Image (cartoon, rainbow, N blue to C red; front, side, top):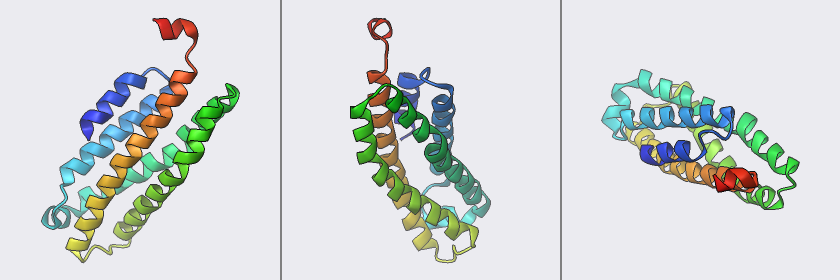
Length: 157
């Protein structure tokens, strides 16, 4: 998963400072996820690391919804990019579902409702799969908007 994050940053790294920072935050999220592992023992052993991961998770999904997606949508509107806007309409509902799951996971950890280590590990693994899907959806959205908004000179370079 981390390798695909590096590839995304290489492809769109210069598009916008906001996206650059967000892709860096994504890499940190993936590193923190991988560091925790997905076994009940690993998750139960390091509650502080799990809390730190949850903070990074909430920051990442919040930045997506309240900063990056708004920027991408504004850009698409400014360029009258119907394809990009249509794609956003298709992608955002699935991203919303993933966000809700991520926030519910965070809430569970905030409340200290982690006594069932097997359940937490199962949800953590599901969260990882959902984040992977989310990253692919976000990459698709960035790629469509970025490529369609390139100037002809930049596209030939």
